[in-house]
Image (cartoon, helix red, strand yellow):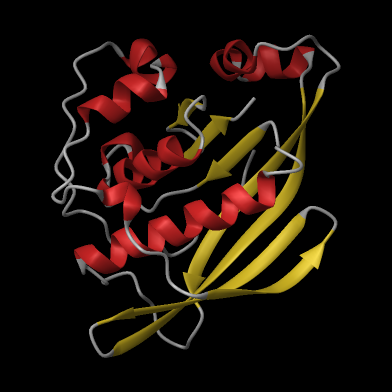
Length: 207
């Protein structure tokens, strides 16, 4: 599942999680267990007021939005994209990605519907250094609301994203991933998570 990396806001002010399990246990750990270990710096992160937003793209089940984000007096418009893809369960998957094969747990030949989530600054500059806690929570709350609306009538099997990381750190150790995972858990309580450190991707199984 090779995909391009994308610039994401810095969420490194979220407190670290202490993963004490073996690597395999960590990969297959339930999202509920991970979420209960997350220590966010603010209470009520799941109820932050969303920013205003508007849909600017739709093709099939793919979509795009512009989010009118801001921090203080600074406008930080965000472009959110949801891009569809297909994932076919096969013998090749079992050979090449056995842990992911175990995670999807579907018969060979099954074709899973997926959505890759990408968001970036809609202006000319990067928002990689945005580090305003209220902005981060409001942005995540906005994305949560959009995804719930988009998936209300057609829930995909898989949701994927690629959080930025620094140097050799594992993607599950990034503050960005911990915040993303917390809000996805709020939006989709039954979601299960798979961490692909080699591909630097996070996959959520939504159904």
